[in-house]
Image (cartoon, rainbow, N blue to C red):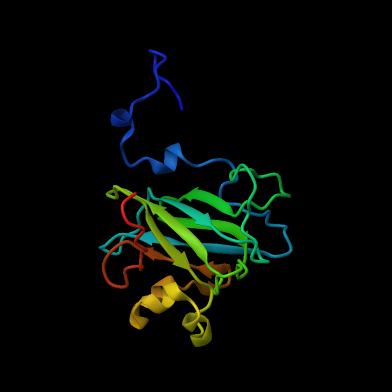
Length: 189
């Protein structure tokens, strides 16, 4: 944390503001694996507000198991040494609200049925982060085995599914409005 001319760190009252994209990113935050990784995929999308306009100052975090379903248990989730998969990524959106991660398809974890990405959204106007999931498939058999998906009304489940395009998988996040992304409630933080 930087300090001002007094040498004192800023207080929370001085740091509240919509600057997630400036304060929290780190080098390589969007690359959970190198692009040269044989199983590398791209997960990308755009964050939209309630009017359907891109949000240019959001920050997205990604949490996931590796392709074998192992949840990383290593110190330093921001480590980027090209050998250690930490299962964590963080990136700001660009001026058009677009984000992109280079990662691997998550595998099914022990005791958890359906592979997914856990996605956290920080954006202007939000006092708390929003948490959702991105699935790469929504086959009936897959959906039936997942307690989160089965708790979501069927006509809203598609908001949790990343579609495919020529560049990888697309997971757009709609903060409000038509086709608002389903966000998960973890109670008070």
